[in-house]
Length: 337
Ligand SMILES: Nc1ncnc2c1ncn2[C@@H]1O[C@H](COP(=O)(O)OP(=O)(O)OP(=O)(O)O)[C@@H](O)[C@H]1O
Image: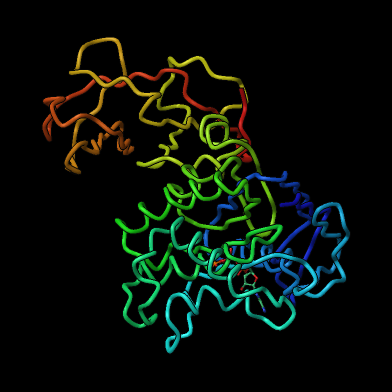
């Protein structure tokens, strides 16, 4: 395993700055997730580390070695893509063994057997080793695709939304397994996704990407609780953070530059209407089963909050809304305290 470092890396495609002056160090054994919407520059960043793209500016280091000019094959990384690409005519065993059988590796057959069985055990597909790839479900195929990356034991694993083609249940199962495997192997992983749950549950650190720039990097908790700006604040949290004009809560003590108040469920106290607080009206309840999303109208502004189904509130109820330690943002979107 090895450390990855990018120093002031930029990559342009014509007029588009896909990656813009990104500096980032991923420690040996760390799981860093790059989070951002489509087009933010996540895949390009991975491709720069893999050597599938060359930066216009900046350097890429793996294990302390400057690999900026080296081809992918010389970098000891594996890349797992969103769409599994298995050899359909081969068995699961042979698909997994494939990277070890490359002429440059010349791995002895008994070692191949041992490694393939070990990876199949990690991914819980030992009973499928004799199946052809076409006889597998989507989730099993993606496990094999991940397994193909694992057998090589590279210095670094790069994963580009490897779970996004799976249904929600399989995604959550494989998420747990990926994290377990990464910890078991002590693997260095750079993983990209636009799924906030994946980022929160997998990452040692989350890097939030916006228009090619790394706008904040930190533990999932710090990114969630202590966002640097409105953009980062809106990346995490379900329901999403409520962004409200400061004037809606005139009694709340706020820094003078504050123009917008960011309010998550945990910043809200909602009670049946009484005097003294800002009041609103419940105008919609989304029932999710174990919890509800409560939509409250406050002076024609919508606030959405998570509540227990047994809260006893109904559409049309008047409620008092008060805030506890919300987030404040200046006119330019930067956080102010
Ligand atoms: N080979 C290319 N040629 C031209 N433009 C490109 C190329 N690759 C990426 N881009 C552009 O660079 C920007 C970043 O793309 P990138 O694929 O890195 O984003 P992403 O965050 O991975 O998005 P997604 O989640 O959709 O994969 C986009 O505007 C994209 O259109």
